[in-house]
Length: 455
Ligand code: ATP
Ligand code: MG
Image (cartoon, rainbow, N blue to C red):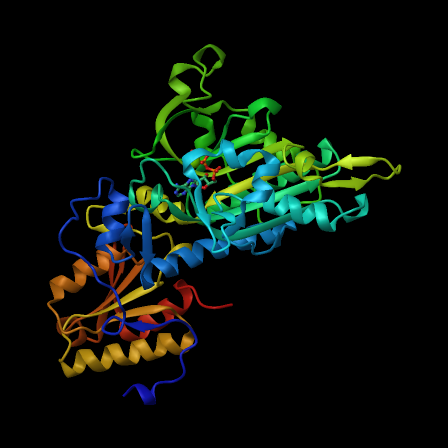
């Protein structure tokens, strides 16, 4: 049967073939809804405390999030690299962080007894590369990013991948000649972050964060409001209705007005919140809990100085590079999105990050009319490049409904014997629960119009 199907353009998949171990019972170890749903919907399995295996469905979501992050970074002119996970302790001694970092750093010795570590972040490594390779102001500015696994030996790994020990982060590092340049690099990331999170269906609010000894206003955490968030946050209600910047924003232009449009409103998490300095009227002040999904930070010469990232300036003098670093918790975002978008029956994926665009449910596998109608629809969507997950398993209809709701694909197409007698199928929107009866012919045109296909 399969051999006769037209070639598949997308990632269509039969449920009977997919490795998707779902759970009916709520796992006792999971305290928050995203962790419970990630286990139940077969996205992840724990390997050891704070360390997880990503199963096919979860890995697809992770890759989609990663790709959105990548596209928005590329749009700013940042360039992707890939630094190693294992680093030598030497560079960290130069910056002084080998001792300072404490127990969160996983320290390793190789066979020659050399001290190594599993990178919790990459400032030292990237600064060293720039110090070696960049010698003139003409080579600046530069902004390099990578999307790589990090390890932090958190005291209390919890909430599944939300606070893991091993986690995937996008981190980038900007290098500029002067503070004005550094501010522009910072502003680019500020805008890119707003766009990145909005594309995932999230409302992330930039909040003033700790700057350390350097002071100033260039440190923001991007926070999603959710009941299960780890920090308490305070912000002006006006921020909740601001629109993210448009895709055609010109990153070479002055971005300060677009940044100011956000930063002029009060927003702070618990460690920065100061009631004495908060002039938002009580009625307009939102007090909530939040999940930190990103952090952008300007820190001047903190690393370039000790690691010797110095170039020749336009007037021949030596200039120490101005740096900033910018992180996004790529794996944490999977949990954050679920926290923001679910109901009692399961996950509700925003289309942009859904593991599959649509689920096709065959209510009566083994019934020749149902099998044939489903096979034809599946083949049609396959050929159109629609990423459909076809539940062709020989299990009860109720189980298929429950499973499809649990894994949260944005759309469901339901084909059963009763509707088929009149040539009809049902389309259900997972989010609203709205259903409509549609003829088999119209299902095809609906799919072409409404489901994402490869460009
Ligand atoms: P937190 O205060 O949550 O520990 P952090 O200040 O240590 O975060 P950064 O060093 O700025 O975080 O890292 C950048 C991003 O990486 C964070 O905004 C967060 O989304 C993510 N992140 C940090 N620690 C973890 C972790 N243990 N598990 C998953 N994601 C993490
Ligand atoms: Mg931390």
